[in-house]
Image 1 (tube, helix red, strand yellow):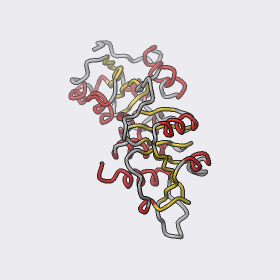
Image 2 (cartoon, one colour; image 1 turned 180 degrees about the horizontal axis):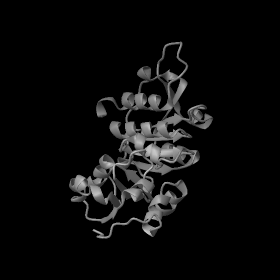
Image 3 (tube, one colour; image 1 turned 60 degrees about the horizontal axis):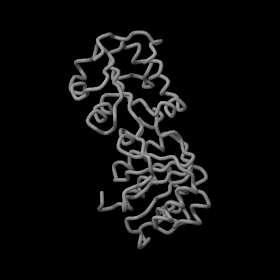
Image 4 (tube, helix red, strand yellow; image 1 turned 90 degrees about the horizontal axis):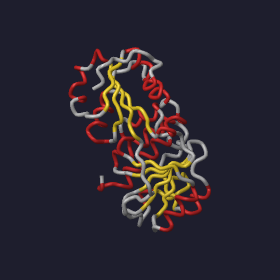
Length: 257
């Protein structure tokens, strides 16, 4: 533990941590911040690699059960410093700087479903989808021109789900080529598709594609994949992307959850 309590917002360590609230610096350093007691506890219990923990020096005893599990760099700071790092309205007093998972090769486990997000832009939708993906057993998510998965709003919306998933940024061409090479069925969520409850022969080796909130899935995916839909009463035009993705994930994985 660093015995000194950091109070300056100009401290280099604090400035670097605060920069992680900006997407370009998250990518530069390969790290992001998780904010709050629940997320930090999950992280130190092994969900993801923790680089350092910033904690309000006045609340050290409150988080003792978390800190005793952590043998890395512990940084006691003032409440002012915690507030400068947090984007929450009422920070809880503990924030961790964690390492983005880096996978040398995109190589999902055979038979494990893949979730492909095609130009999802709303952070709330993205967080909801990540949260459900983690809950249903999807371990790999591919982002195509999608919002930053490590933004504070997405992390909050994911409710910790992001800590357990491998997330890759790929092009449409790359993921389609991979699926075709590995004989992975591409299932496209599209209102014009077949009722998912009547779609036979899906199997376990598939990739589910969820499209942009306004424009849906790209024409290329529709041409290369099999379109499925959720049945709805005629007066409803569509469901929110996060809701649609969540329902489809539960239906497709069924008893495997």
